[in-house]
Length: 426
Image (tube, rainbow, N blue to C red):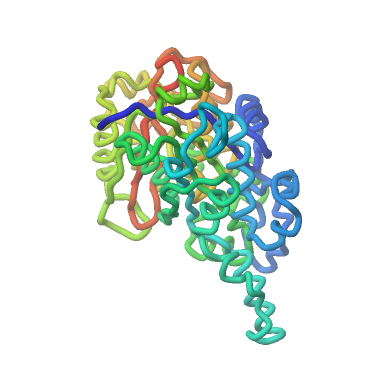
């Protein structure tokens, strides 16, 4: 059995705002969501900026008492799932003639780190008042699989329910595995993506100690500059990206609005280093080829790549080389951009958010650094430039790519008249 899979709903929470349309309009306008951190005092930390979500009110989506029992990453996940389900209009276990059997609807939602703020707060409380004073909700706030668990309980989803934890590839893996579940008949619909809320003292401090973060403290809104020659590290982001996937014929039967078709997925590993990509982007090359083969398309069918583009020296150079290797001369015609220039790096939520961003066939989200792609061109990669303005495009296949610490990758690919997306994750 091999069935077609479509996206019918998206839910986005990023530094650009809460809500899919708000995010989309901010992307097209080239707004930056990166600013000074307001959530905690960083003390002696050098990095004092990030892509914080600034307009989120959990009680708009979750009952106040329940929200208090959840970590912020779980609140983001439930809220984004609520938005995605509302946009899709799916019914689960109701009397509606087009309802889904609850046992055929699953949830795969992950997080790279999970309840970090709850862990920090509980540890501080334990040191001050004793470990016997910990909240009975502490463990539940911390563990990643509470996000899909709570989504399933709220929406009566009784199919597969689990959480990938694969750093920056997490939500791309979630969407890709959900795609396979529907494609091969295990389920008829899936809710998938990722959530992250790691802008805390430990989160920023840990990545700063790795020298992974940008230290452009004099101009934080210009710090995330993927592929630019002056890039100096990534900017921490947060939020959630959740999509609703359905089997095509059922979605058409109930008159669903089809946002995009997911046509392929590839996942692999570098087996090389804890944080650095393999030289020349060798693992990414293999991953993108797997995704293209899964989708049954040629490299020349691809018109746009939403790149991993973290703004780190190692990633961007190797990703550029990988794109050139896979796409050859066609790389000169590709439109490539990284939305992390506006949202920051959302870690485990990055792939889910970017699947949500690839929702308009005719428009490419821009990067917002005027010097962007200079490096790509001078190093002879000559990938097609996306400037600081959104661009129209006629090609219908849009890959979104994710790389992670430990060298895992995923590459889902999404398309037809709606955008077609292929996922590549490593």
